[in-house]
Length: 75
Image 1 (cartoon, rainbow, N blue to C red):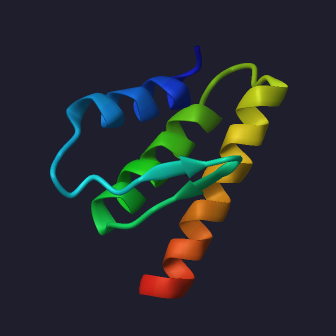
Image 2 (image 1 turned 180 degrees about the vertical axis):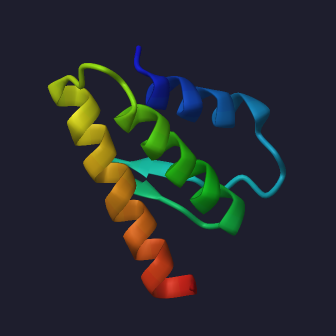
């Protein structure tokens, strides 16, 4: 399991009352500024890996799209 998967699992396990991040099919939906910040940190950490797999690259792409969508709608 990659870092991003661990991050998403950790968020789900915390289950804060305002938790709204969801993976819908192959899309990540960010609903709060905190989720946006966590998402961008996770992207940076994932990009720091020495060798990125195809799954890592796909996950980075999904996370960046989610970040861009959040930025366009909320920032």
